[in-house]
Image 1 (cartoon, rainbow, N blue to C red):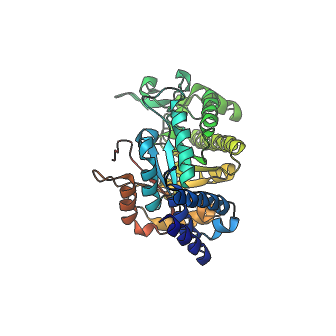
Image 2 (tube, rainbow, N blue to C red):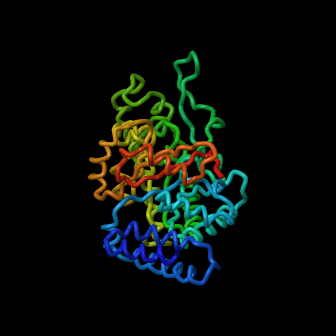
Image 3 (cartoon, rainbow, N blue to C red):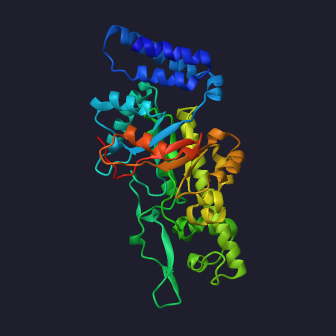
Length: 387
């Protein structure tokens, strides 16, 4: 079987179907070490050929098919003893990369990095890429300081006065706080030492990006633009609402744009750290549907500005599909990114009871044929379990 797979892969190469060839080589490479001598010989041939093909620009440009990354947490990764069969199942399902969230709710410092580092080495031997998933908006895996926590302005019930909402109800940090940004960069550098192939910055889950602030970030904004009004006065109303004067509304949208640009700048700094460790590493940035069909809402609610993200980071945009959605909207977006492989689609995995991860990926792909050749991120829910 090993010899047959090797020559099948070579035949696909002769036909110019490099994607199919690499799939055969990955299956060979995922074979367990220490088996029969002939199998180990072809396993070594497959590993060498995979390395050679990855170095050929023509292969990257002409290889048909699409890339499929499956996203899961490090806690959802099976035991090491199951990795060989697990990798083979994923490869047969069309998966080309793992997208791993390293944050452990019950782990200790350093443990998550060791787990990911071991996984990266084994996945690379099988021919799978591994990207790290990083949530800048929640601060998971970081010792979040109280001064980093965002505050929001809200109106007390039965009152016309605006006040600062109880900060204890806010659990996420301000991505514009200098101290938090320094901590994020340090964490990124630590995670990049695992040997991963890149990093994905997760999209913000809740709305209200422009309505939140920390004292440090607002002072930076006020100093930069000579703003004299308080955050309570500025953020008390909604953009375009009746609570702001025309002058205040102009300041409000300047604030929203300034925050979104600050998020893009932080993403660019993370990409710089990535390139220092891995010059060929890829940065992926997850966004919401509104960025495609409602850019103003995306800016205000999620801090997503496509022009800033593309220009400053040079990264790949992953548009999270929420609901049915009109995928034709992605075509002009693909033209704006300048390359089809710089636009991916994020979908939630189907999770039938008792199904393996490979079976879930296949089931998910079978239900979305209209997604055509878009590169995909198939994300598993945090609560999902599989054999």
